[in-house]
Amino acid sequence: MNSKSVEAAQASAMLSQLPAPVLENLMANSVQRSFSSGETIFLQGEPAYAIFLIVEGWVKLYRISTSGAEAVVAILKRNRSFGEAVALRDQPYPVSAEAISDCTLIQIDGKRIRRQIIENPELGLNLLAATQVHLHALIEQVEQLKARSGVQRLAEFLVDLAEGQPNHNRLPLPYNKTLIAGHLGIQPESLSRAFAKLRDHGVRIEGNHATIDDLELLRDLANQDKGQPWVR
Image (cartoon, rainbow, N blue to C red; front, side, top):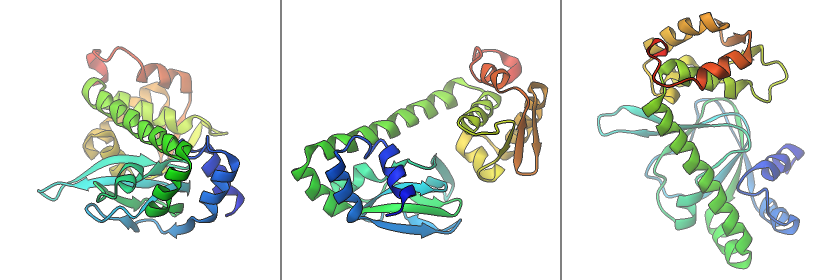
């Protein structure tokens, strides 16, 4: 494994607290895989054969309804893992996973990790911690959909994107606007209106980049009283 893979493992909720020998053994028996943008990682209903950790890139988790509509469940970035709960229980994947940029993933065999949990209970506790991260993210997503306007959701998305970036004044959008709309639970035309409203708060969209004049002003908007009708 290269240094980026090791860094991703050490920074992930799933593996960060493992003793060094346990982590080294787990990484030595994992596989590094590359996926091109648009490539399927696994499909909803397939046997859960592995847990994945993102080293580089972005991954979309989604479900297809009986009507054929796509519902975006999560957009995951570097150091996030997915597939833990079902791989541990040897159940089918409840969602599909697709690379939405060129990706490098660490693939950990589900059967192997179940055997290692018996030998190292700390690994099981760490996997529970990783599933807790997913649960909290889903709770936050429900809160956003229920209590925040589309403008506020977009503002928070841009704030999260800017945090940790060396130049948060000009940010590359990590994926296309249709997918951003799906991730935020709004229609593409509503996303365009939300971007237009954010111009009054110092946000401009130029191609696939967002220019943010004042990050704190944008953060304040995201955290304002959810009942203010002018932001809806």
